[in-house]
Image (cartoon, rainbow over all chains, first blue to last red; front, side, top):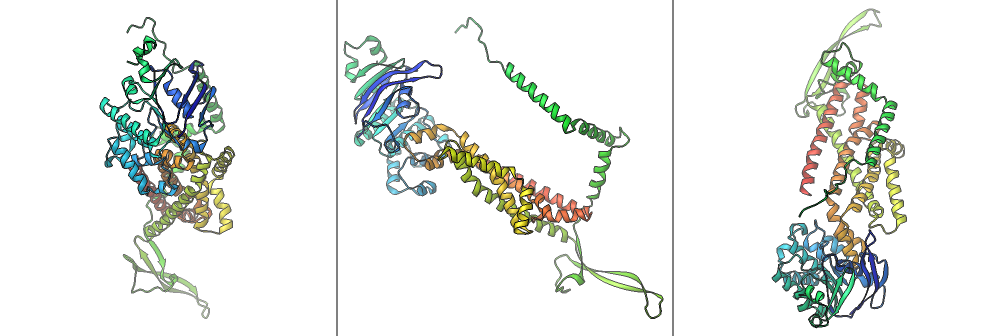
Amino acid sequence: MIDIGIAGLSVRHAGGDAALADVTLYIPAGQFCAVLGASGAGKSTLLRAVAGLVDADEGRILYDGRAPDRTLCRRIGLIPQDFALCGRASVAQNVMAVADIAPWRSFTGLYPLPERERVARLLAGLGLDEIHLARRADSLSGGQQQRVAIARALLHRPAVILADEPVASLDPATGEATLALLRNETLSLGASVLCSLHQPALARRFADRIIMLDAGRVVFDGTPAMLDSPVAPSRIQAVAR
Amino acid sequence: MNVAVPWRFPAMLDARTLVALFGALLLLWYTGQRVEIGRMLTLSGEAVLAEAGLADRSQVADGLGTTLGQLVPVQLSSRREVSRIAGFDPARLPPFAHIETVETRVSELDPETLRRKDRIVRTAWLVEPFGYLFHVAAKMLETLEIALWGTVIAVLIGLPLALCGARNITPHPALRAGSRATSAFLRAVPELIAALFLVIAYGFGPIAGVLALGLHSAGFLGKFYADDVEDADARPQHALAAMGVGRLTIWRAAILPQVLPQHIACTLYTFDRNVRMGAVIGLVGAGGIGQELKGRFDMYEYGHVGTILIAIFLVILTLDLAASRARRAWR
């Protein structure tokens, strides 16, 4: 169980304008936290900064009160917005890339039985079949690639999951089923989740907490029920509807 | 949507590009003077006009015509004096071979009578209609074997050089600098020069050829592989790195599948180049078809030279076709 602390995080674009401005958040271990906001609000930048893919201009990000090192990073599961799969590699190779297995097994494709079973269970849960294992990632549809990226992020039983619009390429029904699987997996793992979404309804249904960003600043931070509270500004209520 | 003011599109030729183009032209003009490009064009033009019957003579056309004319007819058969073949058995001739007896009248001085005396000398020759063709094929095979092993050595050295020399996966920047410098050094020593030294060390034969080709092309593959690795899509690498995946696994899972087609294309080209260079390094005694070519050229046996050149051309053409099929299969 790992918590995430974000203190005074600021990230500026190359042009100098702020992508994130003084964002301070604490995500307790095991909490499913949805990040909402319009396009360009800073959701992806926040997730990329927390994942270490973007350098912060100011502020700190701590996991369990510590700066992330390789051991801590092994406990992170990342679902990038663009999936970041290796297109020419098979689905099996892409997912198994994060498995804790000996390098020779990774090179030969002789994966251990427990890992094979877990991959099969994850992919089946995400609506993919055995025939997809050998297919190249770039031969899959966008939605299928997204599900492969989710399976990859969950395979090594992470304690922190950073999901950047994990259901953006999926139809509503599949998106809901996928988010349900993500929710169940994270519950069983006790993982902390920071998940950006464009669908407020899904955020209301699956998240313990909703953070809303606007122009790189946190403008709302509370439970889904608080969104409907009369004290929430009408602008926020409109976005979250 | 109405756009009130027309949008400004970026110019293809801006001032900086024009200055760079002008600089490049200036450089070509200056260096062209030094390497006599003008004279080359004049002589080549004269040759074309002479061949078209529009000019009387051309130094280039005469010289090339004489030499190329001597390459045909190409030599296919071989003739060996039977008395010089160790353990020759007339009952077991090679396929298609026959024995030809040539009678030669020899005029000698008789030591007893001190008078000239004519004598008939019969010489038996073993004639093989495709003997020289088979000999060239065997030498070509040796060149192919030298090129193959040169390429294997190049891959074995080039791959670790690339893994250390690619910015995105090198364990340390100093190792990257060292690896890039080693690749540059190996490329800087031409095969022919390397073969000269290696022939001194290992003696005449294929060992020097294999090492000369292997070391030189390792420099090329070390650079090409490293450049491919650096140019690979960084997104899957970054995603895996963010999840704490080790450098070797990132290379295996996120880089190698991307760069494999380029690696295969580079390796096939290196093999193709090694076959051609294998013919050249034979000139300094490093084995293969080159040694045969040099021998025949020095003895002005241009028919034999023609056979060798055609054999090299056919092998390169076949390799090119095979390589393009292999590249298509791995695309």
